[in-house]
Image 1 (cartoon, rainbow, N blue to C red):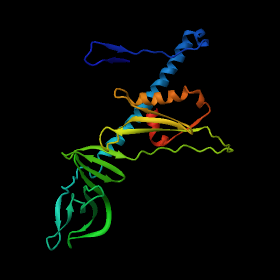
Image 2 (spheres, helix red, strand yellow; image 1 turned 30 degrees about the horizontal axis):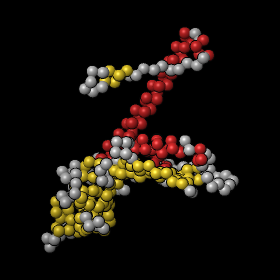
Image 3 (cartoon, rainbow, N blue to C red; image 1 turned 90 degrees about the horizontal axis):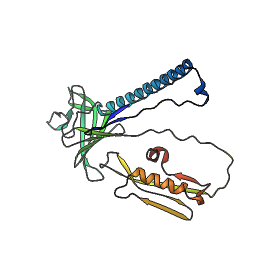
Image 4 (tube, one colour; image 1 turned 90 degrees about the vertical axis):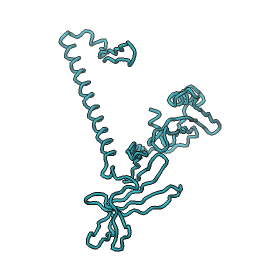
Length: 263
């Protein structure tokens, strides 16, 4: 593989070959060729599997951002719908969807709209009770947030969809049951994170620590240090401490959050 370093007159080449064990050095040319071709075929298939997985990820990301009501914007829901007394009762979002909008201030004193899509009787100018879809739009300084279908859609001040937050589904760790034995060699590890942008889900570790019953060790990220270095230093400190031999450490929220940083 060849990599060109941008803005520099440097070409970086990474080259490798499948390793042979001692016995394979004594194979004939045809046998070595067959073995190498099998290895190449294996790597090609691995590459195909990676590309397929990457395509599925991109398709999922595309579908998240291009959801059904993407272009319906807060405070600009469509044509006004009036009752027989010319009172505003809702909005016509498109050719088929009508919605009622209830405006209020949420628990954080932020202006919010509760939007409910319902069937509309054009002859009687009334909404039916059944709700097909619903969401909440909340105004923020940088635009608004839409809470819809267990997802958070972030729009900027130009009404562009810039990010989507969704629940990450992680498989739970399997439990293995065995005869219980009391063991006081138990400790805990925890980390603290901060986000790049408020609410957008991009996190970095800035602090961490481990503790046992009679000792605690804390780590705080230096100004020029990365969160990855902090994690490495924390685990190195544990592994190099002979007094911790035989200890089992519990990591709070490991399977559904911190395992991402530890990897």
